[in-house]
Amino acid sequence: MKKMRFALAAGTGLLLLIINSCGSGPESSAVEPKIILTPAPSANVRINGAKIFGVRPGSPFLFKIPATGKKPLKYEVLNLPEGLACNPETGMITGTLNSSGKFMTTVRVTNELGKAEREFSIVCGDDLALTPHMGWNSWYVWENHVTDRIMRDAADAMVSSGMIDHGYMYVNIDDCWSVKPGSADSTLMGEERDKNGMINANGRFPDMKALTDYIHSKGLKAGIYTSPGVLTCGGYAAAYGNEEKDVARYVEWGYDFLKYDWCSYSKIGRTDLLSDLQKPYILISELLKKQNRDIVLNLCQYGMGDVWKWGRKIGGQSWRTAGDLGGSFEGIGKALFRDGFDVYSSDSLHLYAGPGGWNDPDYLLLGYLSNWKGETVPTPLTPNEQYTHVSLWSIVAAPLIFSGDIARMDDFTLSLLTNDEIIDVDQDPLGKPGYRVSRDGDLEVWKRDLEDGSIAVGLFNRGETETEVTALWSDLGISGKQKLRDLWRQLDLGSFDGKYSASVGRHGTVMLRMWPEK
Ligand code: GAL
Image (tube, rainbow, N blue to C red):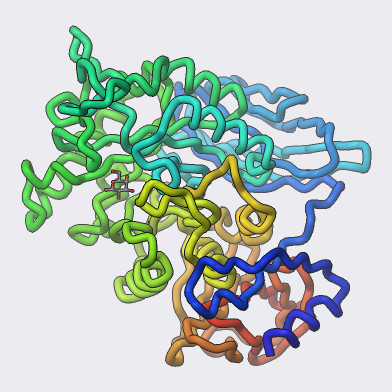
């Protein structure tokens, strides 16, 4: 059956590249080849990533236009509001907007083969993160070994891999950049704060400002992490009692994103009191709002107190909806279905997220990850599970933050991260997260409404054998003939009425987009 499906795809004229089988996952994955479905990038220009971007009045603006196509590319933005300028060679839009408003611009990117144009809205106001964040985070591959060099290499790799041209933007340090009290490691020792009470970075980060300057020089944004307690989860100096100074420090250093954890705050606040759960996040978000710099706030308190119901109200731009997806390396596959599918459905999380505030089921655990035993090894997810991971995250409008080794990706991993039609679903400007419309044992159908009136549909098979999954129009809330496209393969499937069925592999996914036929 599986073979038949590959043959079918190959028969359509699509080039399928079969790489060596993974071999590291559960038994059944040993026979599951890594098949690249994402077509190779075209030489023609395509403008990718977010179509809408939020900024606060008076904050420095930085947005690099993501576009693919044969280089060199020339970038232009028509109707750019006063205060902003676009560099035609780099595609970086920079400057400052002083007054609120929605500015409709047209981005035009040209190369020797032609040009592409697309609308790009800049919304100057209170809201940031009008689409889910896209980027990279150091935690799952580098955990407590992260350094300045690693972060610079990550920024370089974001550019050299082309991820930046598909909309990836944030390069985020996780835990372990501050001093670790009591550590015997000379690179982690030292004064936690300077004489003015400003937090110090540890010896692995000799110059934070130079680091963010480097990241920004590539058109990327920089992220940092801390906890509201005395110590971070890893036992490093954190923010408790110094929140105002720490926020000032992040601004001085030039950070654009803050992940605010929980951990040792349990010694200060009670987890069974909503007011205690909210208090540190209210404090930090109020401080962040006062700055002349846009710092996106990611709440990382594992979903306690149904954070999705209040995360946005108290000023968060995203909130973790569950514990660590990769807390147990061997358990990532199980966690994907539990924290991804089940938490999301049982709590109807789609009702709470949208432009400016997103559910965050944790990072994309693809490529090489730490196994928490001192080694960096391939993800235990099978190839099908990896497709399921990225597909589900896009359907539910989750941040696409890759946390494997960005400097060591194979073509398969890169193809999972850079399928522009999948990314278009994640970044859809309507910002309406998808949800499950039907479940029949192990088979699930999910749907997401998109801005142009089409819908994205995920056919998921959580079972152990390849099975046919059917999407019924009645479940999807649509009627009449629909034009269907397979999003991973970027291939039109034709016109269908009433239902669509596809064979879906073990733990796998078929991602579709459906437009009503006129
Ligand atoms: C956890 C958090 C992880 C990572 C880790 C660092 O609490 O969920 O994503 O940040 O702390 O110690």
